[in-house]
Amino acid sequence: DQQVKQNSPSLSVQEGRISILNCDYTNSMFDYFLWYKKYPAEGPTFLISISSIKDKNEDGRFTVFLNKSAKHLSLHIVPSQPGDSAVYFCAASARRQGGSEKLVFGKGTKLTVNP
Amino acid sequence: ETGVTQTPRHLVMGMTNKKSLKCEQHLGHNAMYWYKQSAKKPLELMFVYSLEERVENNSVPSRFSPECPNSSHLFLHLHTLQPEDSALYLCASSPWDSTDTQYFGPGTRLTVL
Image 1 (cartoon, rainbow over the protein chains, first blue to last red):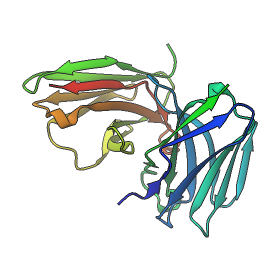
Image 2: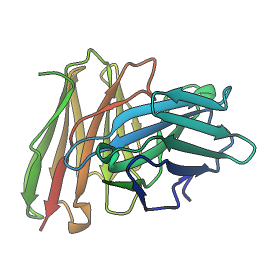
Image 3: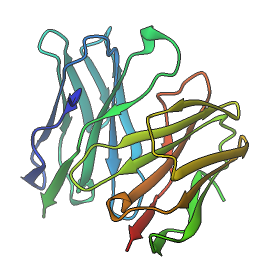
Image 4: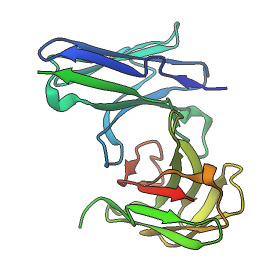
């Protein structure tokens, strides 16, 4: 059973507009969430994260929103640029549990930003 | 060279072959990971090494055998693999006290014939 779900396998957006990537999770023990970005032939690279004590974290064009009651987070990219075209993975971990803070990943959403 | 490197980048092997994947990190981290990424599936954690000791093995078949000779190097030894083992194998590293902040290598694309 998938604990982290990215229900949209792909998303296409026009350059300059907002991209919204969604992620849902089922494990209420998750308290730290991350977004990774992956280009073809490269490994995933860390993009932005958010702790469960916050509901928003912003870094330049990237903002992550967390809705704990809905067990939902989203990544907003504005304005979108063609270089943002990549696969975006949502990941979660349960830091409070101690031990190894295993990352659980979603399947990814392929974002295409059209010029 | 900086970051996390993996060799080879591509590997084709038969089911009776023995091969090894290599990962090297230049970040001063002391936790290292092997992940498997199959088509249309999430990244699956296979093994975790922390301070050169294996701390997690996610029910991986014994035809995959990890080795961590020091905190900078991680190997994945492969033998008698099956075609369904064809996937992208990703290595990652992190500080041992911040294991959810992981840095990934580019991966090895493995094809088993």
